[in-house]
Length: 165
Image 1 (tube, rainbow, N blue to C red):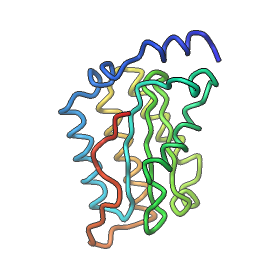
Image 2: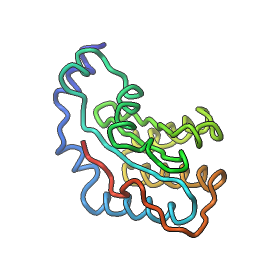
Image 3: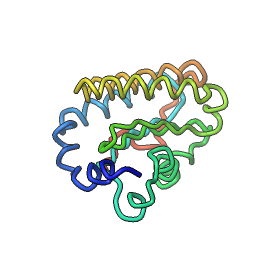
Image 4: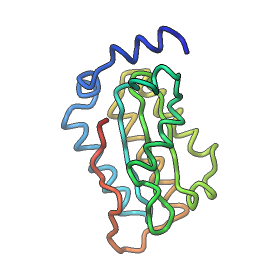
């Protein structure tokens, strides 16, 4: 792992995440998740981690591996219909990863999720943090709607509020 990545992670704080995603932005992200979940049968979790620390940082853990860990820790995998989706942002790297439960992943495929990640990362590079997050949630919602249309039954197996790590 490069020294620049280590330094970036060491000096990226939760405060920088809060500057990019103030309370009002987090509330709009939460509303977007709730709104899209009303249209499909999936479950969406949005998590932002400022930076890796300790052994994960020194081992050079990629964001993709960390996202899989969090998918389990946040219990996104534990949905009744195997349709949970984690949108994970590793802030220090501006890297977006999407991990989806086996039910929805088998229908969308890695290419579909990767396209959403690249769209969000492009917005983040332009400094459009809230807009990038909302566009990603909307895109994930569209994929879920195509494969898990809503049945009108309220389900909220995963909290809509973004998780700040």
